[in-house]
Image (cartoon, rainbow, N blue to C red; front, side, top):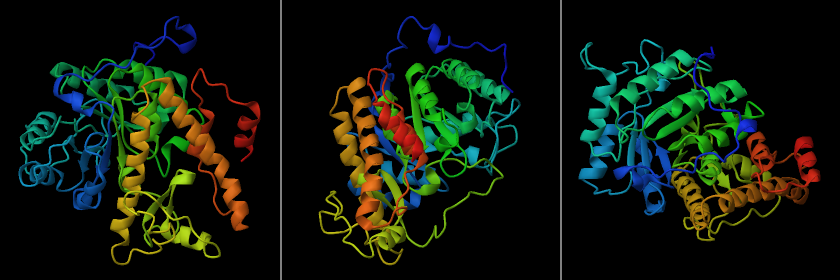
Length: 405
């Protein structure tokens, strides 16, 4: 439940001054500032590394073998870029007031402190900064959140990244958002928000996108990890850094004990980013939609205007690796464009206008393909298109069109 006695920031209508300006990360963590990292399983690192932009990206390793892979990257492969390890305890255990950092490891003594052990293990393999092994924070479980915040604040170490794996229900109502902001502001170092919920968490609540932008704006050092293309929206809004999930399972969190819901034909082909539509589609879906028409030929650094978007129709051969390289190459192009703009309103306008353009492409492409419902606008993309920067005037007709679509 929301704790009414907890300190809360003033409501936005009460603010007479703009929110705090984004603060630079301290010390060695400055290398993370403004970057879009890849959240990836250790076994798939090789798919993505060739396309990484060394000056703008980096890696977050997550899953079995993450520590060992980090040690190998630093020691054997001489990887010098930003490198984080996500303990992902939230996949197995929920946080509680008694155990905000639950012990989900094997081979440790019962009296060991899971937080201290995890931070030490990560530092030993050469991470840029260690991340806390936080349990899943169920919606409005303020006791668990405050317990986790107290322990991290007691470390008084701004070089520790506080992992905040929160159920997206925290972003549903104004009161819970205000309390989340108040608690996160008590942590001295970066705060890595990760959203929990089936399929697309940000599509579950109408105000989730706006509330996410508010958190990024009002919490110094706020980051968004293990997400989808919202990584760009958060970065444009001023997030310290973000991390895009390189696999569909790494683009959101499923609460421990729940089985992940998947789309039809989930495992038949790789997920492919359609740049114009700003969304991922199964390669088989793209092949089916373009069965009677020429598919767009991709000009990204991985495809080099040789491969069409319908060439990933199955997982056979090297198609998974090629699709992964395509996805990252496209995102790195977007990242270079975004970071070429000055932080602030210019980046927010770029992201907003890109979302509006993508929403407008769906009916046009469907008409070209003579398939009225061929491609459907994702709910999250609609919400980003509606979430205009404060100073940007949005035509009323656009807003009506999006709500009808």
